[in-house]
Image (cartoon, rainbow, N blue to C red; front, side, top):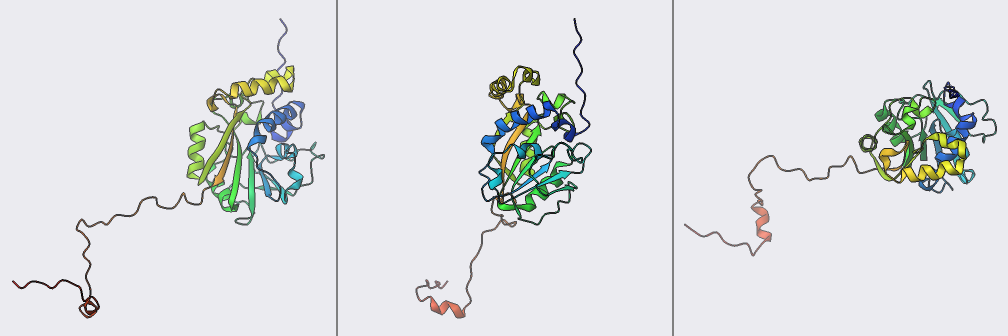
Length: 264
């Protein structure tokens, strides 16, 4: 029986997405992510982590007001892809996860790929919350802890710390984001890509319909929650007695109908 040829492990995200397999995975991701993406017309869009391959396949993105790419300074995401010369010439930079060089309220949409699983998620989510406009949205692609993609180290999603569905929801809630839509992708074995991308996509949708737990990666559309930090209950008085309302004697003359006190 012939031995199965081991697939080489890509050195980083740039090397993976420059390969034929990386192009196929990108197509599968975009097919599942497209329904969650908003209309880009007039939006200021930032790709964060290593989002260039997905942004390049987003139809209509050329109608956005402004598009830029910020790669996180991690071993997986810091290198630029040498074969990405055919991508649009967006402004790009290398950023630290806890110090994003953008003004507060300056971005309408952040698409983050290969971000939360590679760094401490809370400081990064806090920085994203600050730079998003009040109506801003965050679209996330995060590896699922119980899925197949997180267990395959030949994929960029097999690196870092993946999230279960409940862990991701809690992290977003602590980061003051509210999840509005979610889906999954890369749910079926990627070996089906040898049968064609259409077959792999059909299998991906079928397995993904069984629930987020079986998804290879989480796809989430979350909005900036402006009211998460406000108290939801009125503060109660610390003393147990009822409130007593009194008036000054001089102001009581303006109330002629006040009952007179009976003499003992």
